[in-house]
Length: 490
Ligand SMILES: Cc1cc2nc3c(=O)[nH]c(=O)nc-3n(C[C@H](O)[C@H](O)[C@H](O)COP(=O)(O)O)c2cc1C
Image 1 (spheres, rainbow, N blue to C red):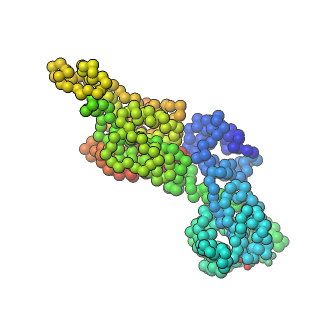
Image 2 (cartoon, rainbow, N blue to C red):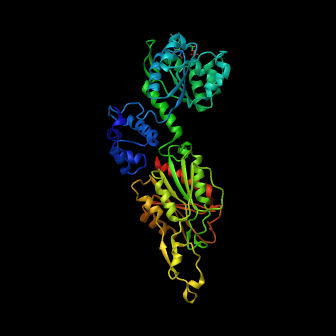
Image 3 (cartoon, rainbow, N blue to C red):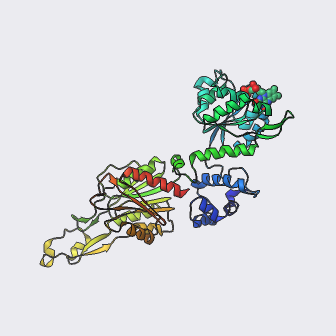
């Protein structure tokens, strides 16, 4: 089944729009749009792969194979070690499975493994040299035994012999495979295969226990008839099961559908994030303007935090006196209108965060002489009757709402609400009225001066959720927000 070309079928096979949306914490309309456009954003490929792995197990649908559905989502690097056991021939199929799914392989054959399979066969399957010798002047030119140990996301030993398990448990390093296993700082997964008596031998079991206690993972052998004719536990698990186990382990290490802690390594590489920050200024005349006390610190902290996560960050900032962060693009604006125009012209984006304190109004003098209208001439007291100057406050455009209801609405639209009273009620109605996803609400009083400060006291207000935080630095608040966003996008 070529799912690339048939997203509706993919969604159907994964359980339908509702199931996919729920599992990925998305709106059903987002998944419906994928179907309508026959396209899924590449930032979701990993999650779809992960989801398909989850569902394959419980599905009787023959269309769902063990293959990655989106094989170009991430190139994983696996170091595969083949030991000298009969099941070596099954590992050839495993190599093909990895290759088919774009997993980059380096392969080590132990000396014994070469008695079972020819290195030339492995080289031709993998399309590159396989390694065996520890003392190779050619390979060791660049410390190959250490390089191989490090340059991968995971080390898989399949089949793992009783001999290799014993050596690893006891810290022996007398060949390339055992050296690399001691030198690696990545996850090790062992798929043992051996005669049932070898498997049950106390020495083998004791070595396995030792290794498990050290965090090394085992894909348990299956029971059945062995190549030697005996029956019992010791068969190498099905290639499909080993493949799935490894992929799940790899994708789990970069994200997890449920936990927030596991997502800390998830990089927002594919996300385009627009952050607005600072105040805006509305000229009254060439000298005076309407603005507010916003320093830009919170918005800049958010922009920086996203940059650190690898996102493509566009910062649209009003006039500030603080150092500009090093993000992909900075657009300096003055008025609310300029901020809005630049926000719109930079869509589409994945996330829009309005941390700017946009001046709600501009002031238009009611009784000024006509020359004032072009704002190039200074207002003078003498222009007004009885020393009284009356202004009309004209509302500025509502940037948040305009973005939130735009055809190119980002997946998440997030705003701030600074209030002096009824903080949560006001934030909730702002959330609803502006049709946005999260409001970071802060109460302005003597305990929380916010403007210009390095600290803030924030409540995160969502449709059915309220989370209050104690005083935090603006950087800490940015981190909390990022975690929330990542979790929401999964
Ligand atoms: C025909 C034959 C089949 C073998 N099959 C296995 C096996 O399935 N599992 C195992 O642990 N050892 C098996 N062995 C023993 C290993 O090849 C032997 O312990 C060797 O030293 C393992 O080396 P290695 O761990 O460096 O690959 C077999 C030996 C022979 C001669």
